[in-house]
Image (tube, rainbow, N blue to C red):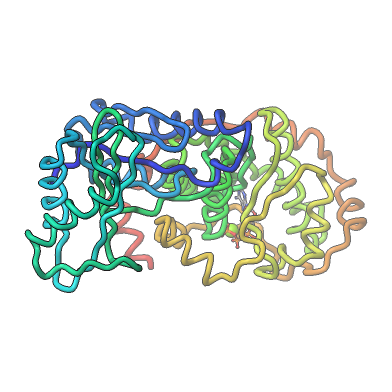
Length: 406
Ligand code: ATP
Ligand code: MG
């Protein structure tokens, strides 16, 4: 079956009143970017839907890419035919034959925006339904909850038929809600937080702390590979690598063991916030989940959060680990996340971090450090790269090596 178009229905944005135009334009831009490899497509937007003309491009490829664009409620591959009723019937039969299996039920649902058309919606339903049951005598006609709704739209220019409605990615178009800095480690939680943040329309830039020579190039490559997976949802993500070893060494030398973790995290957050300010972000997002580890008790979060008043989004704060893992499998980051590389926090992790640190103590200990120059040095040495979907940061050779390790 060769589809000629895809009809895309908007998600929540249809309720957004006067922002609607901006949302639709952004969605148009995001869809165009997601499909930019396919040069023959014609994408046009209307008030209530988007229309993609395939012009011979492969529907399966479009489907794969469209499924990752936030702001889409549902979409349907469709066939465009002339307004001649025989043409409509013929296309309907062909479409239903393509998906028919024993026990299948269906109904025809016609809408007309061309009210001059000489058949009304009931007549069209009956004529088309009749030709389908003639061609497929065992198919059941069911008005309530049929397996398949064969939708027919009679427009001024032509008639469109579709019999599949595919659930889109939901959420809001990325970029409609401003920009946040996403604190990305190599773990399971922060990639899931990235996905959920983008889903609400927020553009993200990754901030990743790394600590050579204590951490390897592979740990950095893993964070970039995760970013590439997530870039499938937005087209491109800036990856900001922040060298952290020097700060960690000074913390290790000067701060009591019980506060190593709290002070490290305060520095990370402070640095992220300064980078956010430079880059005109409006929020910080991270993968903290309440109670998961010592740094994620409410007392810890309070002592760490003390360095900034910037809104911090914690999309997985209240999710159970099993739910987070389920999402990471769905977005295909899980296998990368579980690759065994030490990240900067594991290397300098105290054996017994305080689970109830006091903010005043953290501040007091920090006063022994030359925080300003430590922070400036890290900021002077950040590296920023653009990361795109499907970039290969971990070669297949390496992957075999990892599997041996697992
Ligand atoms: P994750 O699975 O995301 O690594 P985690 O359960 O391992 O989370 P932590 O290591 O305590 O939790 O980190 C909590 C959050 O702090 C992370 O989700 C991430 O947002 C941030 N974070 C931790 N390490 C780094 C890092 N190296 N660079 C940037 N952010 C980090
Ligand atoms: Mg981690």
